[in-house]
Amino acid sequence: MTATAPRTGTAPYEELAAALLGPLVLPDDVDYDQVRAVYNAMINKRPAAIARCRDAVDVVTCIRFARTHGVEIAVRGGGHNAGGLGVWDGALVVDLSLMRSTTVHPDEHTVRADGGCLWADVDHATVGFGMATPSGIIASTGVGGLSLGGGMGYLARRCGLTVDNMLAADVVLADGSFVTASETSHGDLFWALRGGGGNFGVVTSFTFRCHDIGDHGVIIGGPVLYDFAEVADVMRWYRELLPSLPEDLNGWIGIITVPAGPPFPEEIWNRKACAIVWCYVGPHEVAEEVLAPIRAFGSPLLDGIQPMPFTALQSAFVPLYPPGLQWYWRADFFNEISDTAIAVHQKYGAQLPSSLSTMHLYPIDGAASRVRQDATAFSYRDGGWAGVIVGVDPDPANAEAIARWARDYWEELHPTSAGGAYINFMMNEGLDRIRASYRGNYDRLAEIKRRYDPDNVFHVNQNILPAAEV
Image (cartoon, rainbow, N blue to C red; front, side, top):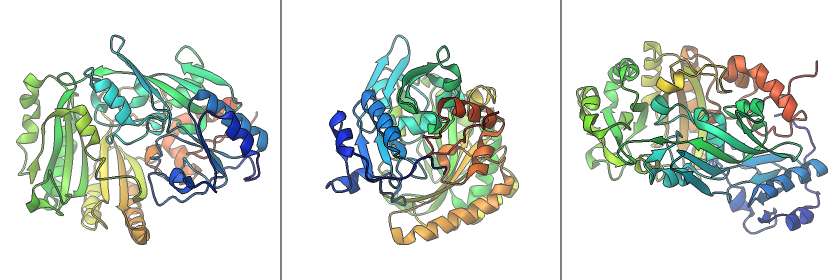
């Protein structure tokens, strides 16, 4: 991290509290520990204050206060960030989590969402009209963090990434000014926001394009689980099949431990498995034809594909991964799922250190891969996969064990990768990894950073350094 201001706990926070519509939480307050907590319990930061903003004016007030008094700034939306970069020791946390309104325009196929929304809020608002905008795979994720990093999930093959469907963003800049960024206003900032993370300002609201999906929001999807002994055969079949499928059908692949509870049959509880979670969003009358190649392969432990509201698929993992677990993340992009990589997945999949630890590969294919590499800040458009390895456990005593497994797995797998990673899957890994993740777009991002945040006020993130003055 690059610090631009000293940490301070002596700023006149009573003045800030009086100026805010939302509450200001300080270390002596009874709810301080609850409010400072983020999704990843491995993160334990003690900010100087947490401003629970109610509107954009509160955000402006916070940024101006912090700049005046030399206070570091951290920005938190949904709080899901892998590295816990929504909080920081000694910082003023600009917490957007109370800003969760949405507005849908069905005729225009758009939705506007506040910067503190979770995807559950957006899905609830849009799926009722038979529409959705591309997001991730778990509804408790924050809209802001996922969107600014790229946004890949079930709709990526048909509709592109979240950043490909962003139409506008309201932004509080480092000088405390407020702008709307779009293709026609602050176009350079708009380009940078679509994948450049929280480097350029605080986004207080987003406007997204929506797409009609399924049968009035009812899709056909769910998990298909294969015995772990078949993981190599499943991965080889999947890598060849996925790019050939109609773009209405998407599926990510992973290695899991089958949860010990409904809706999974008791006879497969706690078994290691290779899982593919499918999502078909096209016409239901041709669904069986589209799904036939999947149903024809292998002898699954479970075929859970069925009609369901898109909100049900999006929320399926929320009970399994509640806030407060220990998480350790490592990630890479991959051009292919090579035989060498499959052997590594077999080795470390057999060593899953806890029932919640897992590996996922998400396709960047179809509509997501047809966008030019330089069209948005998110640069990886090569038609491969974004991979993530996560060690997860509820017990802090197991933190080192899950982290060691993830690191060892990643170090052996990394030579098969394309380099760089999806920034939403990265922890605090240094500038070289950030450069590798943006590839040829990094220098342009650095120039835009210099234009909008020359003092690197917003540096508690996957930080892009402002370009040096020429």
